[in-house]
Length: 149
Image: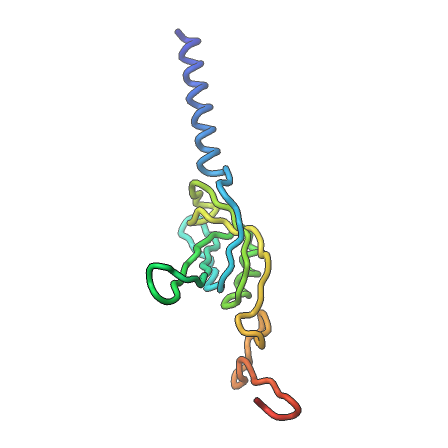
């Protein structure tokens, strides 16, 4: 009887370990999302994590006009999160992994960004990571043959 009980307990522990792995550590999907980086923040009560939002533009067939899609994600790497903070308001392509479950120390979402594929300014004259000085135009008009356009 004792042997049967120990086998049942071992099977239950094994099943719980397999469930825990697939729920929280198995990568369900991965891909690249692109859009305008809205924000990246460092927040949390017990576990401080980096969370962000990407705004994707798209068309919706049922309604006329443009529909905005939001992609909320977590960033476990501090260095990557700080790089993303400098790219706010720019078009970026982010590589992400999707998990079935959320772990509090990994972030608030099932989507975890692990790298930046590419980034480009929203407006071509904008220099990435540089803010204009007070009194200076954000995007000065280019000059052609000494005349302003």
